[in-house]
Image 1 (cartoon, rainbow, N blue to C red):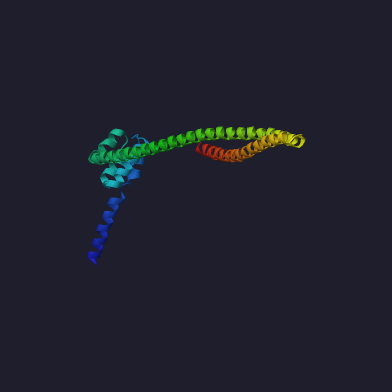
Image 2: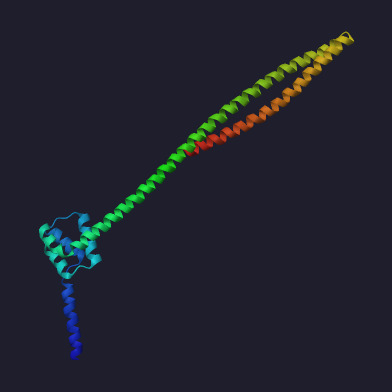
Length: 216
C-alpha cells in the first residue's frame, strides 16, 4: 500500500511540474502580449521549432514571462541553434519551392510559345488555303464562261452544217463542229477537275481556319 501511494505521489509531482509550464503556443503568445514584439511569421517559427524540438518546461516558462525582446532572447539562448536550424530548413524549403515554381513557369512559357507558334502556322496555312480556294473558284468561273461561249459557237457551227449548200461546205462545217465539240469535252473535263480542286481547297481552308482559332 505504501509503495502504491509512493508511486501515486511521484506521478502527481511529475504531472504538476510539467503541467505548470505553458505550451509552446501559449508561451509565445504570452510573451508577445507582454511586450516581446514579433511578427506573425517569427512567432510561428518559434512555435514550430519549440514543438518540433520539444523545448523544456524551463524555456517555455521563461519565454512566457518575457516582457521584451531582450528577455525573449535570453530565454531562447539555449535553443538558438534549434531556431537557426529551423530557419535554415524553412529557407531551404522556400528555395526548393521557388525552384519548382520557376521550372513550372518555364514549362508554361514554353507551352505558350509553342501554342503561339502553332497558331501562327495555322493562320499561315489558312491564308494559303484561302488563296488556293479563291484561285480554284476563279478558274471554275473562267471555265464556265468558256463553256458558255463554246456552246454558242457550237450552235452556230451546227447551223452552218445544216445551212451548207454544198458537200464541200458541209464537210468543212462538220470538221469545224467536231473540233469545237472536242474542245468542249476538254473544257468539261477541266471544269470537273477545277470544281473538285475548289472543294478540296475550301475544306482545307476550313480545317486550317479551325486550327488557327483553337490555337489562340
